[in-house]
Image (tube, rainbow, N blue to C red):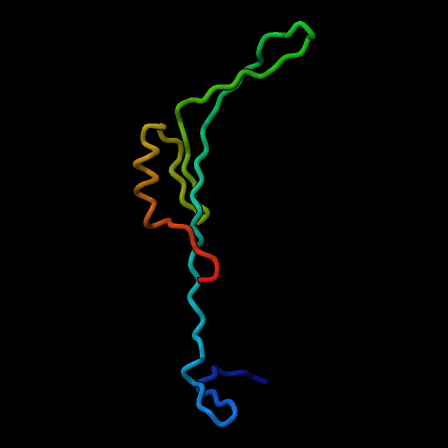
Length: 97
């Protein structure tokens, strides 16, 4: 049995064709994330013989969107301009509409 596209809808004798919804097209979701690059090294031994890791940021960040966009590593100083440029094109998709 083959099903075709519904082009006319009648319910209880009333023409309901205007209520047939065409499926919305698929679009990529957008959700921008920012990751800061860090570096680490073993710290000195404590009096109890434990060793903690010393960590510090490198000054580089990466902007990633769930649509697949990535900025690669950029200077932290360029972060604000990079995110501002993406704000319109990569606005979050609202659920349900």
